[in-house]
Amino acid sequence: MRAWLRRLGRKKIVMIILSVILLGIVSLEILSRICPVRPRGNLSCAVLIARYVPSGMLSQYGYSNRMFMPDGSVDSAAEVLKDRVFEVDGRDIAGLNGIACGSYAFVSRSLPQEARKYVALHEAYHVAGMTSETAVNYKAGANEPLGMVMTVIYSLWYGASHTAPWDYPCLCGGDWRLLKTYFMGMGRG
Ligand SMILES: [Zn+2]
Image (cartoon, rainbow, N blue to C red):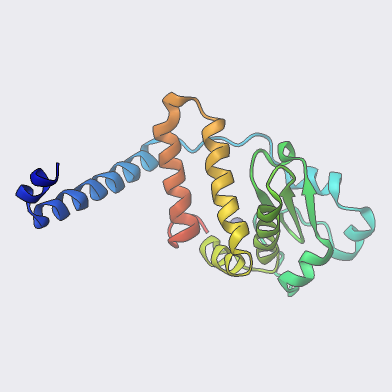
């Protein structure tokens, strides 16, 4: 093996590695474009707010149920974290890790503890007015680095365990799409 590698030469080995990486990226890009975005189950901010937000709080912070969209409120993420992030049954948010709805945020109880902290902060930044997924991701990740890593690992595991093996290529395409959105400043958000 070593003799074979030596005969091949360093330049060629580098070229082969680069070609494999490039081919991988091109394949993921194609998959992410041709695979349909997987439909989420029923997901309604109105239902979440009605189920989890105490009525006293609704009169204080209002009843806005715009998904992912902040109210334009000037509250800081720390302010939101204090009492407006609710841990919910994973089925109520259709398998998402968390979601921001108007003045409130919801985090799946199924996540590992560290990941819950990260997702809570992530959604709190959305409620506080930040819309860019990449910016929110890095900002929350800087405060909860372990939680961010746990969230990524949990999400990959969750996707793989809820997908039939023959759908794995499209799962990879979807994960690539998420990687671009959350880490590379491309795509939604
Ligand atoms: Zn987000």
